[in-house]
Each structure stands twice: as structure tokens, then as C-alpha cells.
Image 1: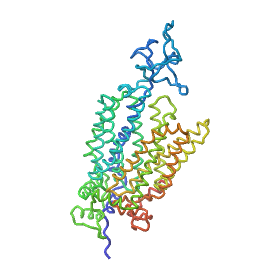
Image 2: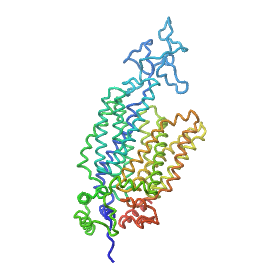
Image 3: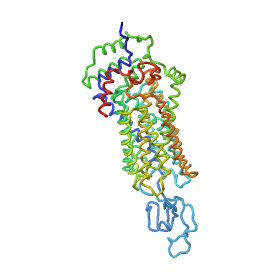
Image 4: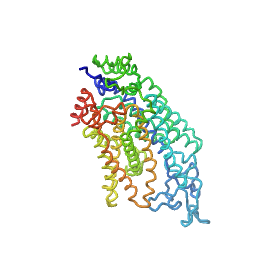
Length: 573
């Protein structure tokens, strides 16, 4: 009996296994991709500092103050400006009326106030608030709207860049998003009014919103199954480092124009990635670019100092020479499928539609809970320096990535994601019932919830990337991220619900997290499985009654890869 011919994706898996899951070639390219992710993290929340609310109060000329010659805190401040009864923060826009004919001009009537037009700002930070005259509480919504518009821009841009990635290549899409972000980020520093700032904010977010998804897919398709979780952890650590980088830059350069220019200018250098990193092997193979696959593999083998086995080399050469047209089953699953045709196949499959809807809910939940809990996290950091607070809040997420990494490698993607969501939901519900005087316990429960939802985010990226086929991986991951943006848009509005009942925001977070946690159990496990290249392979992941190469025994993974996965599991044990 003639031995069945291997499918091309199986041959590629074996070639990658012989190449080494994470050799010098992969390490070099991962370093370059992590650099892009670092800047992506800074771009994601730059508006926190460029459109931040700087505490200010009325200028009081009766006490000798003048523009450019005044300090925010003075001994007579509480006599001249009303203070909030709870926070003791001076009023942004009102001051007490001075007492006429008083012997001391710096005397005020605490019963009468007036609205002022000149202000004294706290600290050296300069945002669009000062430059575009967005002072007083009546303009606070305009500053908050910058963040909402930023998320809308990302929502609109994600599917576009997902299509570019699947149609023209992961590397091309990464370069377009990075350079586009750099251009509009730099242009934004020349904004002349609030409206022009909003326009450039939207355009910059349109490009930068696609960076992480594209970089994540490009990186994940570069390593073997046993190293995907570690690779994902490297990316999210880079993201946390990028937010620390933003905090340090904002601290060093408190003027929003200078800070923005310094952060975005390096993005123009990413044009050189055309020559520095290769295109995704899986994308190239899926699109029939077999000569590119061979050239990259030969370069990678030379870099890693390995030699491929002759049978696999001969198999690969048949692709390039055009001698292999279809596999032994009579259906060429590796034949490039048009984007529209593949999408039609996805949406005519009940399994794929339900799986996609499940992922959508998970993404909305993660963004809603993550950003919702982040709204108050800065105040819990424990210092009066907002830059240090921001840095601490970014750093505290790092341990959760280790937790997610270990959990996904040891117990599987599905169990890890489910556990993280259930833990976060339980903490959200539980924190409401903690007595108000138990501050330490309340903070511990809050931080545990934040820790868990961050771990869920890390798991969700890996999980989503592994359950969809190569042809549509970036598009569907981007669409999940796009739908998830609805959660980040809703999150800033949840504090308003606290005015109705303090239970509402935490109750919503808990309900979403617990529901999604249960529903993740209906998704297939992907630990140790080959990345699916076709729609059929994707549908049959974890289906013991379907394709025998895609059942729960991990037969979809070539033997040489299975041995490496088992080695990684033993090490983690």
C-alpha cells in the first residue's frame, strides 16, 4: 500500500520542528516584533497624558497673583477658593467674591462666588486642556471624548488592517500600521485647535489599533506549538514595558506636544522591517508563495545552524517546482482560498459561527472589565505622583502574564481562560460585600480581580489565534478585537451607574465575567495542536468524531512536534 502523501501544512510543521521551536532566527525576529509591540502599548493610551485633566483653580489677583507668577498651593487658598467637601480639591472655575472696602484686599466673602476666566494650574504638565481652553467641569466631557474617539478609531481600523494582513501579508500590514501611526502621531503635535486634534487622534488610532493583532499573529506563526505560550508572554511583557515607557516619557516631557513627538518619531524607522523580518511562513504557504517559504526556511536553518532531513527538503522542492498539485485525498486543502470565499464558508458553518460569537462575547467582557477596573486603579497605587501611579499600575500586570503562561502550558488554554474569568467575576461581586472599613481586604480583592482579568486577556489572545485558520486568522482576531472595543467604549460610562446603585458597575463586571467564563467551556482545547490552515481543520479541532487528525489525542501534531510539546510540559511540571 502506498503511504498517503502528507499535506503541506504537516510538512511545514515538521520543518519548523527540525528548525527548532525557538532558535536564533526566531529570537531575532521576536525581538523586532516586540519592539513594535512596545511602541503600540504607548500609542494605545497616550491620550491619558495629552488630553489629561490638570487640576486648576481661579487666578486671584486680589492676593497679588498674576499670570506666570502664581503657585497652585498657597496659605490663603481655602479662604479665596471653595473646596470640595469630600476631596478638599479647590474648585476648578469658581472663586469667592472679595470684600469691598476691606483693609486687607486678600479678604473674601465665603457666601458669594463668581466664575473666573484666568487660571493657575497644578504642576508642570501641559495638555490640550490649557492650550485649547478646555478648563472647568463643563469641558471635562471634551477631554473624556478624546479617549472614546480613540477607541472608535481603533474599532474602525481593526477590520481594515485584518483584511490587509490576510490579503497582502502580515509583515506588510505591520509596517503600514506602524508607519501610519507615526505619521499621524507627528502631525497631531501640530494641531491648532480642539477639532483638528480630534481629527488626527482618530486617524492615528485608525492605524495603531491594528498593530498588536497583526504583530501577535506574525509572531505566533513563527514558532512551533510548544513555544506559542512563551512567545505570547513575551509580547504581553513588551506591552507592559511599553506602558512603563510611556509613563517615563510623560514624566520626563510634561508638555504633550514634545512628549508626542518623541514617542511617535521612531515609528518611521519601521519602514526598514521590509528588509529586517521575513513574511509569515504560514501566510506565504497558504497563498502559494512556495519559493518564499523555501528561501526563508533556508535562511532560518543557516541562522539556527541546523540541517533539514532530505525527505522533507524533497517534499518542499516539489511545491516550488510545481510537481505536487493535490494531496492523496483528492482535495487540496492548501490551495489558496479567496478572502470572500473563506468568509462565506465560515458564516455558513454553524460550528464556526457559534465559536466566533462566543469569542466576541469573551472579548467584550475582557475589555469591559479590564478597562472598567482600570478606571480607579491609579488611585490605588498609593502615591501623589500620577506618573509613578501609572507606572506601578502597568508593572503590576506583569505577574499575571506568568500565571497565564504557566496555566496555559500546564492545564490548557480553555481551563486557564475559564478560571481567570470566573476569578475576576467573583472578585467583582465579592468586593461589594466587603465592609467599607476593611480597606486592605477591599484593595486585595480588587487587585486580584485586575490580576485575573489581565491573565484572561493574555489567554484570550493565544486562544483566539489558535482556533481560526491561517487564511482568516488575522481578520477574525481583528474582528474579535474590534467587537471587544465596545467594552472599552462602555467602560468609562459605568461609574455613572454608581450614582443609581454602587452595586451596578461591579454587578455588571461580575455578570459578564462569570457568563463568559462558563461559555468558554464550549470552545475547543488547543494545547499542543497544530495551527489550523483550512476551514475544515479549524472546525474539527477537539472534535473526536470528526477529522482523526484533529481530535483530542493531538494526532494533528506531527510526532516530532509532540515530543517537543511533551518535553515542554515536563519542564513546566
